[in-house]
Each structure stands twice: as structure tokens, then as C-alpha cells.
Amino acid sequence: MIVRLDNELWFPDPRRGEEDGLFAVGGDLSVQRLILAYQHGIFPWFPFKAEDAYLFTEDGKSEILWYCPMQRFVIFPKEIHQSHSLRTVLNKHKYRVSFDAAFDDVIDNCSKLRVECQGAWLGGELLEAYKKLHQLNYAHSVEVWNEDDKLCGGLYGVMVKSVFCGESMFSLEPGTSKIALVYLSKLLQEFDTPTIIDCQFSTPHLKSMGGRYISYDVYMEFN
Image (tube, rainbow, N blue to C red):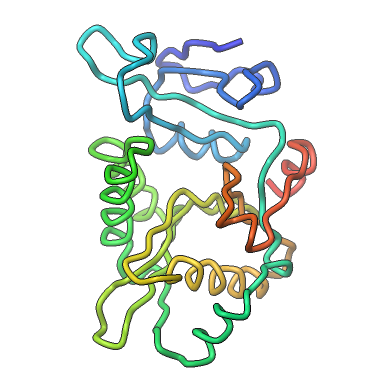
């Protein structure tokens, strides 16, 4: 069942949602609502195209879609898998990695990539919302720089308690988003409590790096 949200700061029980995790539409992208969402394993999603008319308002603006899959595709940092080719690249020390050094540049690159890949929309209002979360130390980025000191890959996401909710990643050179993910995993392994990386959706790319499913109830033990 999909519930339409109002201006009040709340979410219905996501366990009653659709099989793919969609359980609510509407609401806003205020910092308070986003923090509440991530605390419960909920994330916003926008459709890229208007084929499904019910997802758009009369003025043509897309509704905010709220997802919370009951089977969560995650990576445990200690289980991160590095292929032989990836280890070879890392051992060459060709790239430099930083954290929270260029958040706006990372999310802007992710936005461009989504447009080119015909993925879910990432622009305007959503970009500003995550930039506000970054200013409040909830959203974080990992940057990969090449030998010319140019940004060539990275990722960003939202950290709530012991869960890093990965939102998007990009590569301008082969494998650089994987490098960002490896370094994120190394950083999370240094935490005093066990952590997980929420991948949101399964992809061959993430599965090859050790992603697997856990139940929503197990997921919430980290949140």
C-alpha cells in the first residue's frame, strides 16, 4: 500500500509497502524529514521520465517517492571484495583518496552521470537537500584524484548511527568508484561499533564487491 504524505513530519510503517520497497509519495525534502527517513532505512527517489503519470503533479513536477525495501542489499566493510585487477591498481598508488574534501563536486558529477544513464533524477531540490545534510555533517563524500590532481571518481551518502547509506557514485576513469568504495570500507572498519554500507539496490558492480541481502529487521539493528 502506498501512502500519500502530508506536511506533518511522519512516515507510515514501511512494512506495508510494495514489493520493490515503495511505500509513500509526497512530503518534502527538509533536513528533519530526511534524517527521520534515514534513521528508519528510508530513502527518497525521483522518477526520471513521466511515463507513469500518477507520479507527477498537475504542474508537471515529479512526486518524491519514498522507498524502504524489506530485503536490504548491503556490504559489510570487512567483507569488501577486491578483484585481482583492482588490487593491482591500488598497489600502484596511482590515485589519491580524500574524504569530505569536495562534496559538491562529487554530487554534481553523480547528477550528470544519472542523466546520461537515464537513471533516477538527481538535481535541483534534491542536490540542495544533500548539500545541507553535508553542512550538518550527515552526508559525506569520498573523492578519488588522479596523478594530475583531477577528480576522477567518488561516491557520497548519508551516515546515520552505524549505517552509511550510499546514494550514488561515479567514475571518470575505469574503476575509480570501486577505489572510493574500498577506502570507505577501510574507514568504517576503524569505527568502534560494527557498521554496514546500505547499497539500496543490487547491481552486478556492487555484488562483485561483496554485497549481499539481509532482512530489514537485521538492518535496523545497526540503525
